[in-house]
Image 1: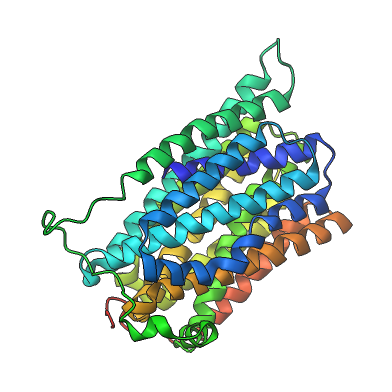
Image 2: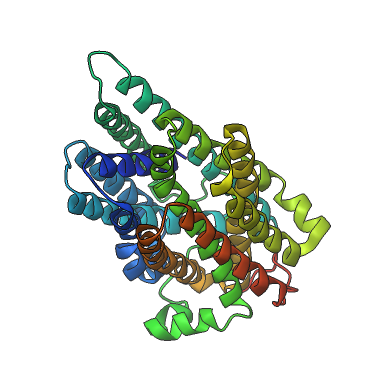
Amino acid sequence: MLLQTVIYAMRPMVSYKAISIGANNAELGLIASSFAVLSLLVAVSIGRWVDRWGEPRFVIAGAVIILSVAVGLIWIDSIWALAASQAILGLGHILSVVATQALVANRGDPKKRNGRFGMFTVIVSLGQLVGPAGGGLLAGTSASDPSENTLGFGVEQVFLGATIASLLATIIALSLIQPARGTRGREKRVAPATDASPQLHLKYWESVGRVMKTPNMPQAMLVSLSVLTAIDILAAYLPAYGQANGLSVETVGLLLAARAAASMGSRLLMLPLLKFAGLRWTLALSAVLPALALAVFPFVGSLPVLYVLLALAGFGLGLGQPVTLAWVAGQAPRAIRGTALGVRITGNRLGQTVLPAAIGLIAGASSISAIFLALAGLLGASTLAVLRADFSKDLSSDQD
């Protein structure tokens, strides 16, 4: 949770810092898309490394990288340096995400995996709520100090706070490394994959191909990348929307927090929704609800209505990640489960690399409103893909 809080506190502040040094909409898109560049190149490899060497060391590496970026952002003052920092931040994020997802997938009863992923993503949502809300309030309060009458000072205070929080997260991550002992407690877990597992000796593209041949993987990836890209672009561009429409940094932070709070609520309701509506309609809801809310968003002038629309969007966006996570983890054999999660995240990062830059160019040529309409169109296409897919397989099955 701490790492998610740090990342989602820093990313809107990076947009504010970019705006303060003269970035336009297209450059904001470049900065947003750079977050996924390095992780796009290494996501599947990280999954394979996690399969082979276990999860803890990669959680620690991710925390250390995030800490380093938080420190660097205090002094960075150019658009290109901001873009580079976001690329490195994305690498730290992918390391920690693949490793923690593998921990959730591999430890405990396979039949309870859906519930574990639901709780895991609730905790992630809590970090996404606390991050922008706390960051916005800290930046706004610091900037309003009479002796420091600039938003830039407030943004730097957020980066300083992120440094402290990520240092604490690194210390906590170190506790995951434990000495090998005979029988330690009564924890029920799946034994880590070893070199004896034949799937680990598959060639790189063979393992990727095997994952992609899983039924309906393209549909699952489309929903996943659409949802994640929408969350990403909202974090990057809502500050620009706020600047253009007279919204304070605190208000923008609270709008992002409203989205995250609704996502957390929907994830708490994930299992009842799956039982009531089934996988197909739950995934369809995760795409169509934010599509409708974001299509209306740029045409609304009332702040309370903006909160409601972002809450509706957040409710839908909160469902896409845990449901596709559980589906991918449930279908992949144990020995290449980390690889499957890495392939899924590669698809997410491809969307996060291409789409923010493309949407930034559209916004640069037209207006900031085009961003919300483009996101609505992407999520609408995901809805159609889900409705045409067959997700009838049991998510709780485990394979070796």
